[in-house]
Amino acid sequence: MLSICIPIYNVLVFDLLSSLRRQIKEQNLDCEIICIDDNSTEQIKIQNITAIAFTDQYIQLKRNIGRSAIRNLFLDYVNQPYLLFLDCDVKIQDDSFLANYLSAIEENHGLICGGHEYVNLKPEKKFRLKWNYGRKRESKSIKERQKKPQKSFMPSNFVIKKDILAENLFDTRLSQYGHEDTLFAYNLGCAEIKFHHIKNHVEITDLELNETYLKKTEQGIYNLKKILEFTKYNPQLIDNVSLLRFYFKSRKNGSLLIIYLILGLFFNRIRKKLQNGSTSLFLFDLYKLAYFTKVMKADRNQIIK
Image (cartoon, rainbow, N blue to C red; front, side):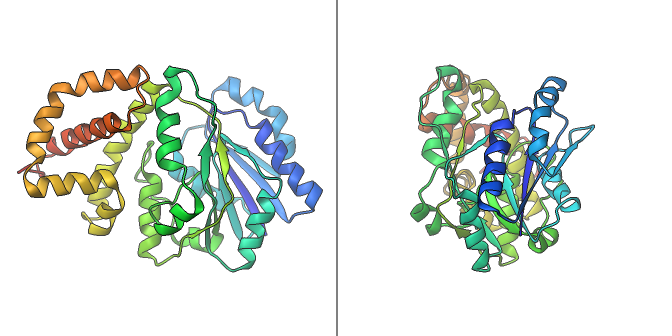
């Protein structure tokens, strides 16, 4: 019934795979586990050898193909009609986690979103930016997610019918990190696929250095500009992404240039504070707006008025 698909990149997966296999065995569930390693370091590959015993298939790629392409690649290996995608850095919190999804599948939902939350223990300052952003912006209750189903889609923990994924692949034009889930959700929405949310959280355990997360955020902003071009500046997409919504609203009312000039004066200072552990989401929003405006201003086809 369910193929559990886990893309791996430089994360140890023994605990995750053992907990999934335990649920399958103890509850006699109709599930398989498939992992694809996206060319992790040799050290990680060696350390993950002991986890292979918990899988039905474990594929190691010789080159990194990226977050979109690797998810599409699972279609070549799965044997079940539904696919559960899990990020490799999550922890299963509920002994009924898989059973919960199987119950939702029986209700004939083609796309089921379980949600995620971040570990409660406050990390060191150097890891605090992504942790704080994840807890306050990404971790949402079932009621919050149900209010805006498409906008609340997160790729860390969801089930999709195989036929739906085959017809609505992740867009491989986005080969690097950032907003591939935004484009995927937009395309599903255009295909009139319903986003069904349930309470079936996983916990995000892997932490990133503030500097690493800032660089990934910058790459994601470049991707966001590409997505605007792919979708021909679709108003629905713009409305679903807070950064885009504020940017175009500011450009329309004439305040964007002033905002850009002011932020330009303080951009390096803001970035330094975030790098050093500031958890101010207001500063992080300003930083993203300044960076996105800079990226858009660099495009000769975009004139800030």
